Length: 225
Ligand code: C5P
Image 1 (cartoon, protein in one colour):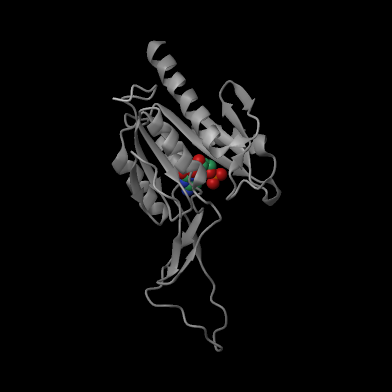
Image 2 (cartoon, rainbow, N blue to C red):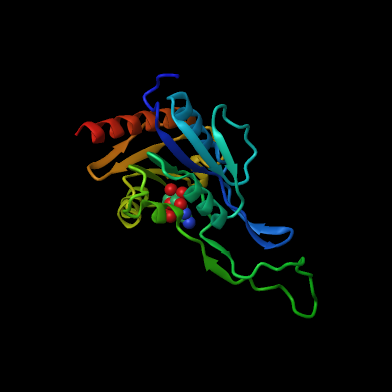
């Protein structure tokens, strides 16, 4: 026993991008590096939690003492999260693709002078956070979402807290000028029902440590309340 503040807790973390196939060799994706999610998994494990890290395709080394589940699509990520329940804390740090291609072609789409460029028909992916945060017996006690925004960060994040029924939203500015996407540092705002806390710029590892410590305090407060 490591005797940390998350000893005996199960923490689920989603991380990275999702890849949504177009045909056997092409996919839609985004620029998420998975760094913040991997740091969260590391921090939770260091604090004594049992950690399930569900990650899209990333090139990061695996954190020690963490169960890692590798998936590609949003649909696979949702199934992996459901399979990992129950949990005390769930942190949704993944940059899940909002859309997937409606009909995945089983053969490579051929370039054709006759038909020109193909049109991709997109359909909405499941909102994993929203589904898991729905009230019910399997809902983790603390559900934490991330909100990566490029403008009106706080307004959008506060709206997300409500619409997704998350307990907390960690909001960050991911404008290209912020250097957050793929970078080592993050500047975040913690949004809860009682207000906004703006944290100074720190490494993604420090954000992770601070967030998981706060989560442990919150669970403790809830239990002894
Ligand atoms: O993309 P969006 O801004 O809605 O993401 C906010 C939060 O919702 C993030 O925590 C993200 O991981 C989660 N999310 C999700 N499934 C989606 C879209 C977003 O879990 N399909």
